[in-house]
Length: 166
Image (cartoon, rainbow, N blue to C red; front, side, top):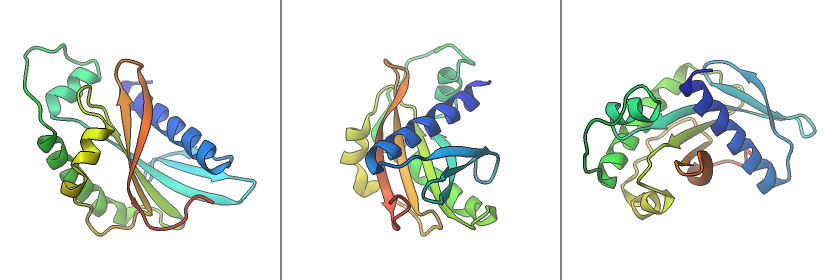
């Protein structure tokens, strides 16, 4: 399993665990595919939804470093405004890409925030700068990675328009 697949698998597993704990449900992945990346179902409730996963990186160099393809070669000053800018571009891109997805069920967009520097609080403080274009996702959720613990550990819903979860 490559780093991207590991990130996707660990992110979906954390999200399902969090949703099951929050909603006393029994969701599990039934299909790992493309467009969307996963189909999740609670067989007891006959509830199904699709999950598209993407990751937010400060820039290409950070992505390569965090995915283990390069060692950090220089020091840079990062700022939350740049991350929010990249997030807004990523949301815009995903909104257009979702048009070609199977939409026979609700769709969720999970954005894995891999920043070793910025946390949910930083994004919450910048919430008014996050631009969520009109889209077909029922839920858009940022999921934050804790570099120290090497796990996903916090959710920030930036869109939730329908009761996907009971």
